[in-house]
Image 1 (cartoon, rainbow over the protein chains, first blue to last red):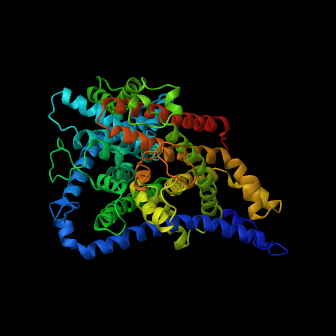
Image 2: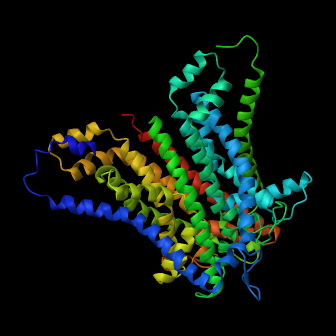
Image 3: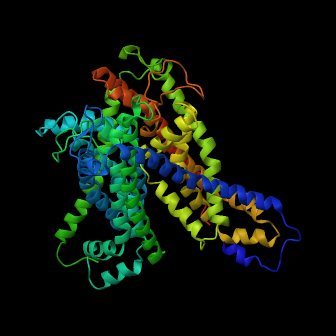
Length: 306
Length: 282
């Protein structure tokens, strides 16, 4: 990039090197794979979803209170799935956002370099555990634990799925928020200390507000990942589309529905097959909006401090 | 500098921050202890040499473990060239003021955050049914490739960006072409970072379950997988056992988790070792 301008435009190669052009073309082709992926996702979701909405009205889909695609007569109200997704996401964020932010403040403002060098890989370890393992843990350990302390919950329930998902998302919130806080210039902190502030005040009134766009981006990304997470809810939250906000009950999220229907042998072209794509499109659009918002916020904090 | 009286609120705040981290580590510890205690019983050579069975005492995970190894190898073969190629294009060739290059960048960042189950839908629609590949190992590897590609690209870009410009300029000054600069100066210097990122992406890929379920990896497989044959990967086998009602299958699932976490920890350790061994400060 900057090298291109620096390598003196007057000094041109004596002959055109076609090999160089071929290589550039091949590399651009690699980059096109990502574009093709996005186009593929949109096409894969959109066309079967359009066919679905020819058979089921979009109003019934988005306002119906019963989700029973396999029943006679079939009903395709997405609200129960949406409610399931919202409840699990809410409980996941209740854990991930405050504790993830707390962890980030500690790592960025309080921890000594050596403590930090020890704690960060441990958090990365947590981030590297497969979701199916968290699902197993939620079902066999956390549900039992919650029952032992006297909370009346179903075997499959949104609460333990949400709580475990919250812990799973903590590293996401912590590492992105910490990145944003570390990027806050030292002078801002020093200025506050010079005015007699304590560490608590510097952290909460200087560093957090200065890094707020990165912090909010980490929250949005965590919400997006909670909405899109499949295995934990498929294993631990159950597969019953109940329209309820009681986290102690079994629920089905959008992702769990897709997973549960996709693994069966649904005949191609049937209405059950098309529901996968209609729900998938809803999920994709929801996460896309959140992701783009987060990407924009991250770019903003990068522009300000880097 | 300390205030005259003890800072009680500060101390409480600090404690709350430590407690936040504590929650993460206590959960991690509980998870590991829980899985180890439940999965220990079935952890023996039999588990690695026998296929699954309806009798938990006769069940192993050999086909699933083999399939996961195949998936891992294919994943590396597919993602590394394409991922590094994209990273080189974006870092060394692309003009960032062009709208299409900026779009490319946002696109990759978004793809990194698309739910994995959506990749499963893509695979179901295009690779399994569209290409007519069927529910085979190769189809699974292709889907996982698309899934982890953004991670590899982002890691490779960072590694390439970390190579100082002075090295490029020195090579240009000696008359090297752009590709000579990249292939003989930039890439060799960036290889440790690229390798670390690729290994971490690999460990994310082989731990994925949801996209594989979508393409029908949730089946009973009693024989060793082949490239173009049906398969069930280790995480899918774990899910399968977890959804059985009998207690013994839950123990088998825990055994599977021990093996899976063992594989992932080995990969992570390798990545950390590579990073520490070869990372250079310019």
